[in-house]
Length: 219
Length: 306
Image (cartoon, rainbow over all chains, first blue to last red; front, top):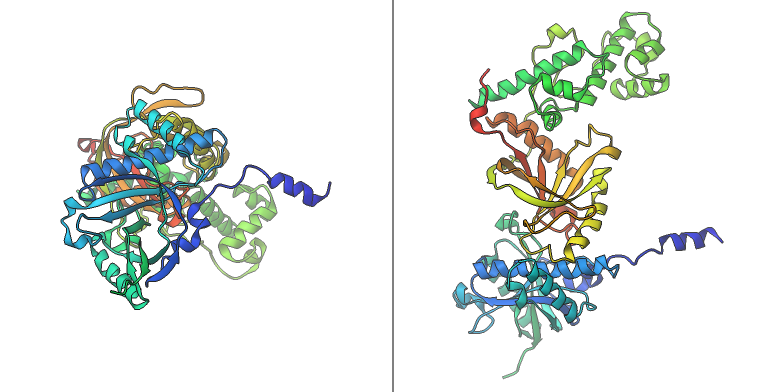
């Protein structure tokens, strides 16, 4: 047996842990000015609701979503199945009057909180995770967690640095960029939380903003 | 009150510093030094390092080298004997250390005309007759101001898995621990992930350092196999957030215990510090990791006025 063979065998242990953000690096471009990104359909754990961010239901929903994400991951890991990193929190936001949130009061905002999950995670695994979490008294909210596939396709994307309530300035730039390129927003505003708001001061918060676009309609 | 307390901390450390100078040839066990200064052995080493600017081990080593330099200059004792007195088993090891501290070999130094030599010392304290040790410079908090809050915690029941070995390898213990709990639905959204460091990695040899990977659990969880249950003490804690990679946590501990604490008017309780991990190291860039460090405070009334 050659040295090369031995090395191949020694390093051929369990497959490496999957990091979806690294695997789909192009979809997570975070530039300081708007760009177009092409996204492929992706699977998420999701929980939706209505109300102001930071409210009771919102906070409980984040907990439930993470509880489901960790339980599914750790159950797989315990069984020796493919390991993966739990992705960051993401969210879609809209209001009854459309996708422009600035026109609606916060308590009427709709949200769909998301954690991207490898495509091999099944509905059955989610059901099992929900069942053990309920059994352990981790709250009923987790029952509302579902698996959801998003196909956003072509999107405008840009990094927003600063408080969440100043996102409108970044969104305006993204909209303008889309228009200059004969595109228009279509679909829900989507954001990916790169920073942790629990300790990072508002002015340093990094949030990746994404909005699906389509060719401008010629009316 | 504040300056009195800083002064009190300094006086207590000064007793240790004098003792070290008087007993340079002895073992200088940490427990003994901590007792001299009336500090809990849990925290003494970090307070020392934070205030004096070097660890006890580094301090003793430097003083022994400075003493060796003075003996080289003033006496005719062979270099090998001086090396042995400085705690080195070989001439080579002594020469290496001596050169790195003074930029010259021991024999080169002996034959040169320079009168004396001291190594760089943040505390300004050098090898001397112990009776002359009356003062040292405390390290000033540098850089950004440290944000410290006082928080009251309820006692917390945790499931834990003990790790014995280098702290840099605790990830492996977490990797074994979390799947066992996770598959049972014990990792909910409000679960706390906590690290309890029983030993200071600069004091205890890394292979023997003890660390408990802890996860908050309710009273229904019972110990199983390798997983035990313990209570983290409630009460008042000084809390600061460490921003960035885990391998730099030691610096934040040293700043909290060695720089903030002596100026805070507070003293520590005799139980270990712990760290609460706020994000998941697997999906987070090391520079974005957030860790709250908790140092247990003694009740305020117990401040002794000397």
